[in-house]
Image (cartoon, rainbow, N blue to C red; front, side, top):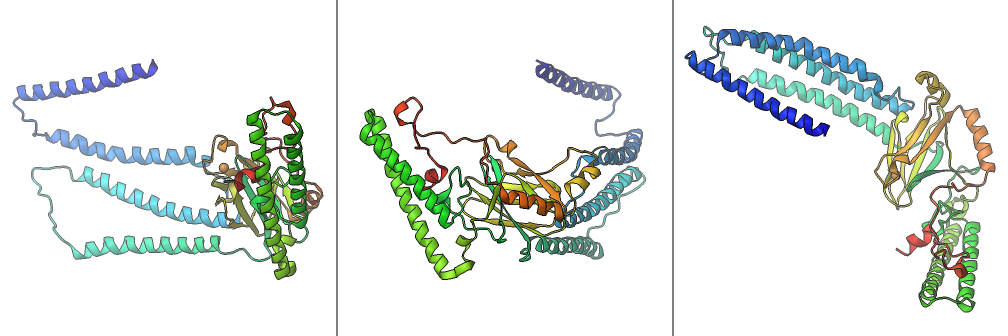
Length: 421
Ligand SMILES: [Cu+2]
């Protein structure tokens, strides 16, 4: 209703202006004035308005910056963040200088050189010096911006040093999981075939493969026994037969994975990533030590996500089927940042910055940055804790609950779902 009223007001307003213009036209005609004739008074009025516009325009600009400047991100809490901010501010300063200069000239001249009957406009068809000036100066400024920008970018994207702290961020609809390398300092190999509730990142070790095979053997045995003894409708029977067949196929894939793993271990010895996963810490917490370089490796289970830590000015896509990396060195601890922000509840945050589905908005995890000692203490505690699957995102059981005879172990794991695609 309000919208309709506003629309009516706008339409009536336009009509009123049109009518006013028409009245002006007619009165001019009555006074014997042609429409093209503009009086000197009109011209002078417009010229003064051009000058008046300047302080109003820049006043508004200054008000915008002072009123909303603090709504921007606070100080960068990472080394490369400070560099990106400096680069951005450098660009802003150039833009502001050019903006003020060109607009002052534009409106000042428009007001100063108001039309006069006694003055002819100066006509200059060509001027090599001027052409050269306005080509070379912007080109030189652009070259500086580009070289500075490329240098900063090269610094940010260069590989992390080998002794950087390693962390993996694992994305899936709709949460993040972190993985730390454990005592050996190396992250172990992973494989989609092993992903399930107890091994959400699909870490491959001899033990995890044995566990998975044992789980599948139990599931197959249970399915076989149901098929042999339970009274099932024809459709249920068919469904269950297909499930068991799928499990058998999946089991073969896991056996193939074991073969690949054993080959790799035989070939590379202790360097094989398959020997480094057993002590990995999989955790729903994200902690980083301050003033240490961190190499963040990012993976996705399902669709493209994007790991975004705005306060550290860091962002990198999480792409299914590959590992992307980004390095960063946090420079401000969570506690110090709370003082800077004058907010005791402040936390750094890891967000998903790709619209990845219905709950994308809520795909986030707080980041805690502490000094080295506190980080060590947290890490030592974390290494003792077994992975706790979050309560969120339960996986739907494949067998409908209405069939009370077929409730046991047959659950559809993500690995299975992915492996069969
Ligand atoms: Cu996402």
